[in-house]
Each structure stands twice: as C-alpha cells, then as structure tokens.
Amino acid sequence: MEKEKNVIFEAFARKAAERIEERKKLRTMRLMVKSVGMEVEIRGLTEEEIRDCMDFSDESIEVDKYTIYMASPTLQNAAKILVEEGTLKQHYKITEMFTGSERTFIVNKVLELSGMTGDAKIEVIREDEEIKNS
View 1 (cartoon, helix red, strand yellow):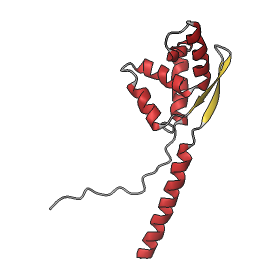
View 2 (view 1 turned 90 degrees about the vertical axis):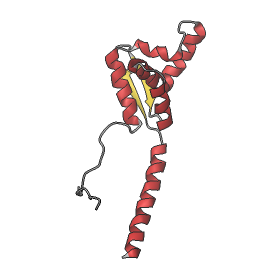
View 3 (view 1 turned 120 degrees about the horizontal axis):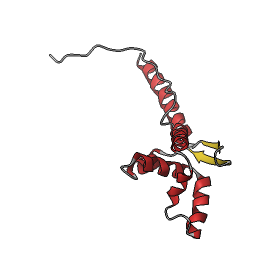
View 4 (view 1 turned 90 degrees about the horizontal axis):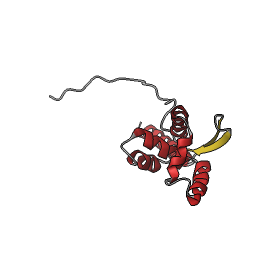
C-alpha cells in the first residue's frame, strides 16, 4: 500500500515538473487587424508581467493598453520609432490606434496565450461533506 502511494506521488511529481517546464514556454500568435491593414504579433506574458500590467494603472482601459503593448514586439518596435520622431510621448499609447473592441479582443488573446483564460480542463470527481469539530 505504501509503495503504491509512493509510485502515485512520484508520477504526480514528474507530471508537475513537466507542466512547469511547459508553462515556461511563452506562446505567440499573429493577428490581422483589418481596420488598419496590418499584422500584429502578440505573445503570452509571465505571471510577473501580468502582475506588472495590473499594477500599471487603476484605469482598466489603461491596463488593457499597457498589457497589449507589453505583449507585442510589433507594437514595441513601432512605438520606439514614433517616440524617437516625437509623434508619440508614451510608448504604450500606440495601442490607441485600435478601437475599444479591438483592444478587448487582443487583450483577451494575450490572456489566453498566457494561460489565464480559456478552457480549464478540470472536473469535480468527488465533493466531501464538511467535517465538524467535536
């Protein structure tokens, strides 16, 4: 019995280690933004980057703009040029080129790539009754 438990826990530990390594790989996606006729590359963010984005502002719209900027090398490179030209004061404001609905779509894709939204493949297999203290 004890040996079976050890085998189960070892298998669980191996699977956990594999998942941790897999989650370190950040996924990318290319989006065609038809209203501006250009492709934008986005990537998943780490939990630390997401935390930084959430702390960026109390305004949810500004958080969305900053999150999209942080997740897009395409926008970062374009913003650098616009800031150097003096056309743009703050790098992340390049995301103002998108409509509100476009920003919502893009930020949701970033969160999906980051593993923060989407289908959670979890199912309840047993619900135990509450244990009362005697």
